[in-house]
Length: 196
Image (cartoon, rainbow, N blue to C red; front, side, top):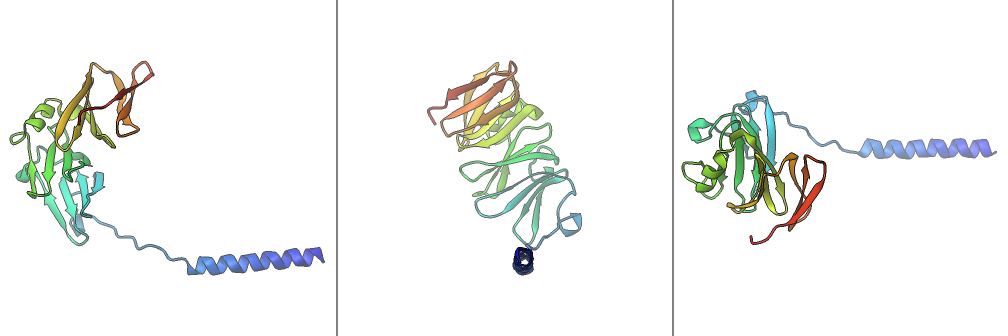
């Protein structure tokens, strides 16, 4: 009798699971390639801005996707190099662009153009670090590690947090007002970030 009840419960559980599996929906997947407008099949980074646009850092330029079409930005539009390694969105909505071996650029959403070191003292300062910039987005802003220097950028204001800091992987933020840095000796250092 117990065997029949157990068998009945297993069959009933199987039917219920089958009903749920049959009703589940799969999300549509869209593939993009050079044929559909992406400038390169090699994509290093992507970010979605606050307006919903998707930005792709590729080997052949910067691509903005509006859900239908790609708009491609290259050196002809002001990029220092067509190989874009990293993208980050600042709190003011601007997109920070980190090309290979060149100074970062900013895509200004209001002006709809790329701002370069020629037009920005901030970018000129960062330009001397070239390809040695490591950046992450944090609650405190965009944190940059460059040749033993730590910086935070928030709304296009650069704050230097320290120099001669030898890190392995750069800063790792854990809150709006403080950060942790993993240094060569393996210790973690935390410091308060003030005066934004």
